[in-house]
Image (cartoon, rainbow, N blue to C red; front, side, top):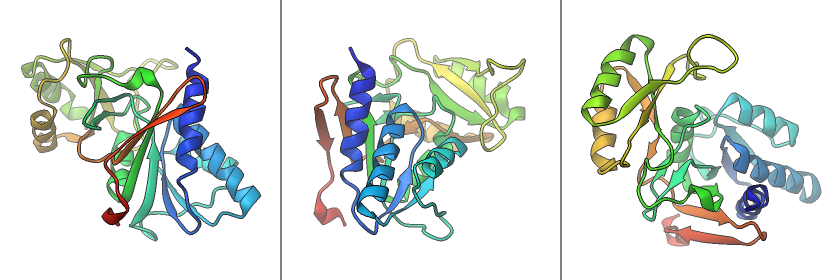
Length: 236
């Protein structure tokens, strides 16, 4: 399967949803990069008037490269549309995100958007969350051991994410560490786990995105797309 073509199709379709005057959430990742490229092309070719809030340092650099004007949630706390990728998406539009380590900022931006569009290729679709990718949990360094033990109590296998280029843990944009929780049989009850992690001292955030996505665009290798959506214009 030509995943690159599928990612490009999804990103370009998401970019077509952008309207003049919108304030956008600009996500992180390889599929979202195609959306930012397409938005930047529309800015240059059509004079599209938009502003974007990036979810990471990488997204900020990419947006600047494509001439997308930037803003912040301080200046524009309400967003019209956010576009981002996912590591997994199920039939209920629930997500696991965070393989790129930007999930905390991504969740803040997504929840401030009237419409949150997820772009993905077919390999990201799952019947049950946690079956393909671990769940990232961003923690205070001193809380790594107790949080890891709590995850073991949930029958997960937690591993501190280590940086490939150095001898030490991956450090998030917030200066925290990331524990990847592997669930051998998937996550049976994402809502319950979400509540437990949200209440756990030492956890900043995690990669479960529940009741956040309004749309999922699945790109196909032939350049076509498939839309799964709960969004209607009456939501605005």
